[in-house]
Structure formats: C-alpha cells, structure tokens
Length: 71
Length: 368
Image (cartoon, rainbow over all chains, first blue to last red; front, side, top):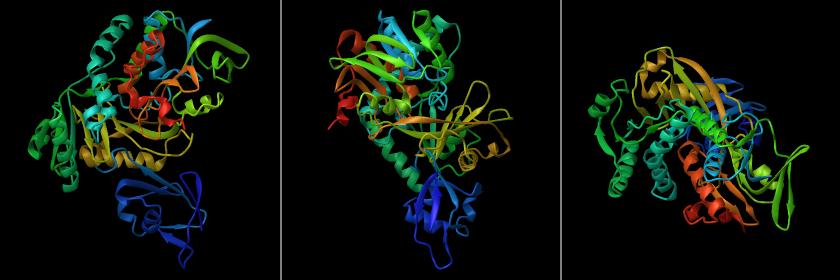
C-alpha cells in the first residue's frame, strides 16, 4: 500500500481490508502517538479518534511532531 | 571590492555584517529575498539556554555566554536605532503534567544546579502562584529567573539598521548563483550578471547554506527543518512569563499576542503551515493554559530552520576554502546564538584567530 507521508511516498504492507489502523501505521514508522498530531487527506484526527482511524491506499498523511519531544 | 561578502540576511548574517563593520571591515550583504523573513521570522525569540538543554555540553555553554552578552548588545543597538527590541529577562517556567515528565525535569534540575546555574524548583502550588492560569493538572516545574525573550523581528531589524549606519551595503532580492575562485580562494561572489569581489565570504544562508556551498563542492550538511508557529490573541494575556510544557511553549509578546510553538518537521523546502500543525499547537496551548481555548489564532506562519547532523552550528572557515567562513546550522538556536556568532566571525576574520570559537562548532568536523 502506498501512502504520501509528509509529502514523501512511503510503502507499507496492508492488512486484509486494504487499509491500516492509524496506531499500527505510527507503530511501523516508530512514532510515539502521544507526541504527534495527524491529518489524513487534510482532516485533522483528534487524539481520542486515533484508535478508530484507518489509512487507505493513496492517502495523504501528515504527521506533525512538536518541539520538546515529551520530556 | 569589499573586504567581506556576507551571504544571507537573517539574524546570523545581519549580526556578522554588523560586527564586521564595527571592526572596520567593508561589507556587502547579499540576501536572496527579504532580510529576516525566513527562519529568523519563524522563531519565538526565546533566550533559554538552560530550559532548552537536555544535557550539559557546548550548546548550553555557548548559550549561557550568549545570554550574558545579550543586554549589552541590546543597549548598543537601541542607542543606534532608537527603538525598543523588547528584551525581557524575567524568567521562564517549565512545567510537567506526568510523573515521568516530572522525573526528567528533576534530573535536569539536579545537574544544572550542580553546575551552579540559576534555577529554582517549584512545587505545583508555587507554579500556579507564579502563573495562575496554568492548568491545574500541573505536578511541578522549574523556573529560570535570568532567561526570557527578545523580539526576533525587532532585534534583526536593529542589527540591519546598525549595520547600514556603519556602511554595510545590503542587497535584497539578490540570490547567489556562483563563485569565482583563484588558487584555492574565492575571489568574488556572483549573483546573475552581477559580481561582488571580496577577500572573505561568510556563508550565513540558513537552510540553503548547503546548496550554496555545493557550488564550491564544499560539504556543509545543513538541511531544512520546518517550524510552524501560531499567534493567539483576542483576550487579555493569561500568562506573564514564558511557559514551557512537555510538548511546546507559549511566549507572551509585548503586543499582547501569545506565540505558541513549534513544530519540528523534516519536509524539505515546503514552507507553509498545515492543518495538523496548527491543530497540534493549539492543542498544546490549551493543554498548558486551558483559558486559551477561547483565544483566536491571529496568525500562523512557518520557516525552515537550518538543521545540522549533531544539532550544533557550523562556525569557522571551510576546510577546503580558507577564506569562506560558515556561520550556519543554528537549528533552533539562531536568535540566542546569532549575535554571539557575529562577534566570533568578525573576530575570526579580522584577526585570523578562531580560538574563541568553540572547537565543537568547527565545520571541519563534517569533512572526511
């Protein structure tokens, strides 16, 4: 499955339904979900909706990290 | 013919031009767009070498020196320019909301106190006594009474004006297209059809320094790291000191706005704000000071910081080009270290002596 992540093409193995849960995608990119904001195709995903959100083939995903890094 | 051509009109380039002119050099400054409008503009103006330091080291040391020298520089500039650069050194509060964040703050507090740095430990009630609008979820924090902020925009304008007063020739909208070299030295800097002959070059082009250095086949490993910021307003300011949380900061500015920042993004040269970025900063701000939920986002903007592989700047001559001096790679520390960089570069070029510049900042560290 191909995604555009922060403007760059990334490939990931999808699950049976042609999509990946957002937390799983972040895990594969080794990103701590607590430290980032995410938008999929321009729609911001609120933190409490992360678990239910999925990314699909061709989605444009924006992952934003903040200064400080959680410390 | 100039003694020195400075490439780049951000805070670092303007500080270099000002200090070089003060030391008696004739200087031309080449800026590809407008002065002070890139990473320099996308900063909050924080002067926080202690709050920002995760570990002791050359960055914190240079930052402490820069902080000590700020008031005298500002006095000089304000006398020359007759405007206030909004220097405020009335302390920064950094708070924790989770036990592991509190532990990390405690570790920092322990080693910084051991080094004799002026820092105070505050329990939760004291944090809220200092800043009553900080979230009641606060568990504790540290306060650094000698840190603060400056208006990055006004300070850079001050450096630029003071440089012009001292005879610096500033050329805006003048992108560098190449160099003329002779015998291992750069003899002039080319901008399209124009050519600027010089004895020395200062490369202070921020995130574009690497691209410009590549025209000399020199390795200056700077890459753009985007930072987005927002300005919140529409209410009387709920905080009176800079407040840092685990995921960002709030800087109250003299104009009544609160600058909230910042993102740290590796997205090439795309220099725009994004929905997720603005959302992240607004959420961070509300998490720190819940009352800001009622504030309006008055402005949002972004800049490309000059990142370096070890997060330390590159200050000093390039190994293969002895008359080309790097002054770049300041990443998130350009406002704090910019004026000091100007002094170090001017001293190095005028006296041929780089012993005052931390060896950790030597650009030669990246040469194979």
